[in-house]
Length: 173
Length: 208
Image (cartoon, rainbow over the protein chains, first blue to last red):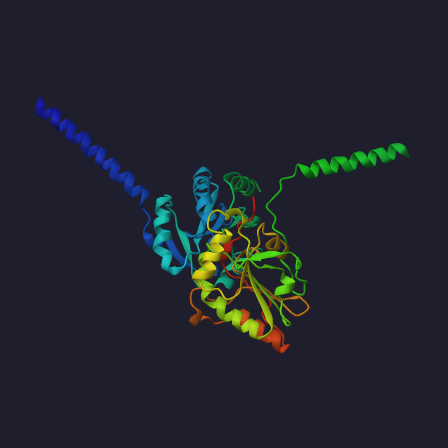
């Protein structure tokens, strides 16, 4: 009797452990290389274009040292989950190369589990590739609808409501 | 006739009321265009030395260099090794130099006058570093980030704006020393090219 109880307990433990490791691996199914890929402005435009006809896209350029970027980052992650079927988020870290590991660490802390990008190359072509309206100040956000039309873009940090308003507008336009 | 006038007035009131309820976005002031006159040149600002200055007073015989800068931005830190050499070059060429701190929203978080004085001392600033207390100058210039450069000629007309050069992290690896070239060409009476450039930087922390 005692032995069968022990077996049941062991089985329960084994099942729970197995589920635990499955969910853990699900959260970390993306490799570091995929989670933060080097990119140029041109490559980024191709990535954004690849969602045309499929989803609205929000592009956000951020950096670990940028306080308003860190403040708004979780809002964008939440909204990506909220509008999963209709919205894709393209995060681009503009950290200095020496801060790459810090950026990667932050993405993991925020449970980002999709491909994001790391800016390489000179500033000017990168800025110009993303938007004529962007002066280079961080953070920068651009929201495009499914057809690739720019619905809104802005410098400076923003609140959850502002992101959601333009995401909805992009989805419904 | 009176009825018509009343209708017009009502229509105007309705239009004003309607506009008041439209969503307002954080629209920043337009950036000064090349050729535009320097604004607010008679507004007094206080330097880290305690001296009270105006842009008019800082300007040299050949022009004025204004850089919106701050204490808390890694991009400022990255470019900072070029601040003194560029100041020396500008002043030797009759161009006055001033850095203005516009980060009004975080004065208690690294951007106070005390912090500016400490930074000027620790980084051996050899130029005016003054407080743009409520970011009025930054707003009038249409500055967006730190660092952000505005170079004016002897008539106080904008001749170059944007980045210091094309490599924040390494002065040795600069391909395009935009600002140095602009200063040299300004003094030599040559065409400045490019007149506007862009670079990444920290957003200005506007007063709330």
